[in-house]
Length: 213
Ligand SMILES: C[S@@+](CC[C@H](N)C(=O)[O-])C[C@H]1O[C@@H](n2cnc3c(N)ncnc32)[C@H](O)[C@@H]1O
Image (cartoon, rainbow, N blue to C red):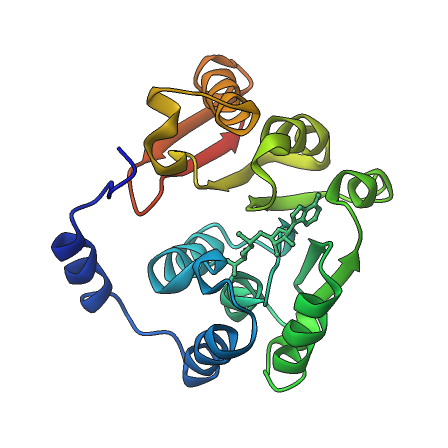
């Protein structure tokens, strides 16, 4: 199941038929590819435009991002936030933070982004006085379920969770390790929890779109 989830030609078609990201984000992709070695970590056009649309449609103002990398998804979300909107981003990689900040400094939306260095679960502990309209989960897979448990109390009623890589390259069908298992348990919990409602989207590597009732 690891070869591809969506046929590459269909994936390419979806990419081609999606609004392109602004030039600064295209440059961010190219520079990430050149300098960071792990371009595959970046969510890219389809998930980025999806995040922007979800943010716009839900009139979201406050976002928590768990796993920022070089800032592609953070900037995609920030594009749709109002001037006084805020996205707080958790990240453990200082090099990725420095890279991302250099792009935030050049973006008209960069001032809406606040970066917190450190393990996301530690950062979440420091945010207990905050309330969020949306949480985007895109960090270490073994903690995926922990991230939901830790952030449900911080999300307002009617708020959203967007969980990327929810299909985890198809491993959810045949879980083998701790990471596979964490994502399977998270997905099961979401589908059966009466406090939550969701739609599981098989876009790219799977997006679990969840609303807190
Ligand atoms: C898939 S990348 C994020 C991609 C980004 N959301 C985007 O779309 O461009 C995952 C990131 O999570 C970070 N990360 C891993 N474990 C973490 C943790 N415990 N706390 C915070 N960030 C973590 C990694 O350093 C990496 O940059």
